[in-house]
Image 1 (tube, helix red, strand yellow):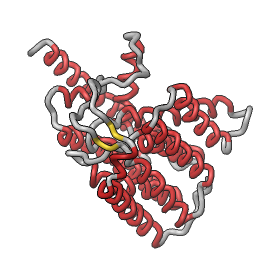
Image 2 (cartoon, helix red, strand yellow):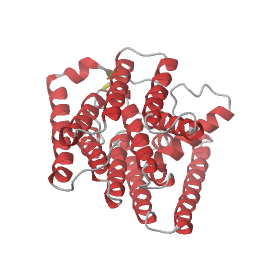
Image 3 (cartoon, helix red, strand yellow):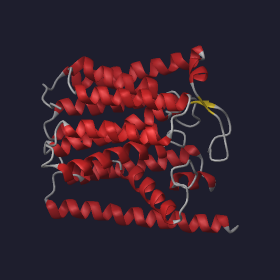
Length: 333
């Protein structure tokens, strides 16, 4: 995945074009009614919404982000193919349903193909396996966290913008353009997804977005742009919530692969927070993680460790607060 390009007009025009085309494409889908014909998210006992909403935003956001990047740079061929393939498979899942084994297998296969292009086998087998699992997990956790109006779209806007800024600071403008294009396309989606949402991302958008977050993080790590903690910290509001929730469900021996409403952001909504309030608070937290992550890139090792541990402590405190409030709510307090 080459990362060399000249700074200049593409750095400004590409994200703007991604935003405009994404917003225009989604407006067209909604205006023509095709969004409602392609795939609908029907409310059920696990939903946080009470009316049918089309869940096809991803089939615009992902092709636009990838297409604009390709048009300006002509780079990242492996990433282009794997991301679009995941978008297609995930849309099929949105429309008709795909068995969980096939879905997970597709996520891991895409991650394995990407990683195998850059990590030597069998010498780097341990690094490769960890990278494949991490990228596959990011693809799934982004999907898990796409359950409240404005949440996944806003976090994509902020998270990929932070990755782009980190790549730019480290002298990798091509990677920055890719990340900024994803951010711009997500901004176009957020026009219609900010509470009250008129359209959802769907698996066709959330799965490829998580995959792209992992792939760009992997590329920066592979080329020495940043340490592993940086992309994890940038997306830590999603990573921490999804990982802790999954771990708890596994320990309780629940059917953890099934949809549920136990994530921290879901519990906040169920305790009476509006979707808008949850989204804005999550944005504020992600702005904090992104800003301190970018500052941390310029710090020596101990300073970077201090940034990471400070956020871990803060997340632990925030989760403990939500847990206490949730127990009081459940007991009628």
